[in-house]
Image (cartoon, rainbow, N blue to C red; front, side, top):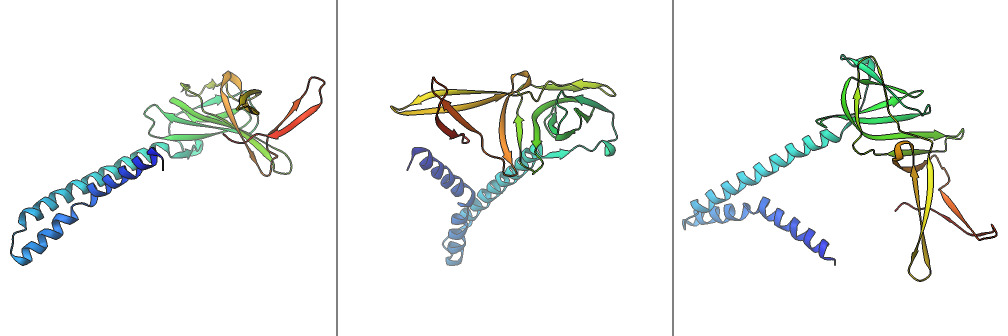
Length: 228
């Protein structure tokens, strides 16, 4: 068993004792009261312990709701928005979407991009992700997603705001030796602005593969990329 796993179980045990340990002094206090051998002090200790544990649980619930609310993504509906709106313009004219959040990161909105434009509420936002999708007639296709860093976005009311994200994509493969006889190939996909993208197949799309050629151009090895 690894040290990390041992520490994890130890942490869980300590938390369990802190949250439920109040039961012991309460039960012992009740037994002593019935036997008339004392017990009020133990009941007080157990009660205080219980109130502290309940407070910790309550704070945890409040923190979880606040934390999860910050990560909840809502589809932005321009028709139902009462405030001012602007437009985010992107070079890619195909199907895509943006996920943006306000400066306080309390809410996240998914903006649907149609023909290279997305209607958005006016204000200051942070771009969390951009996803472009391409599908064939049989439904098979790929999604390319990037998570820009430090991508501030200021959307002005009634005016377009340009955002340099999306294709064309550039794929690069690196090879590193692993052990005596192993070779590891790594695929990196970048788009506009130098942002890295992850690719995911949909609808039965064939997995990404590679072919290794020798000096004469003859294929000597074929393989498929796996996540990680």
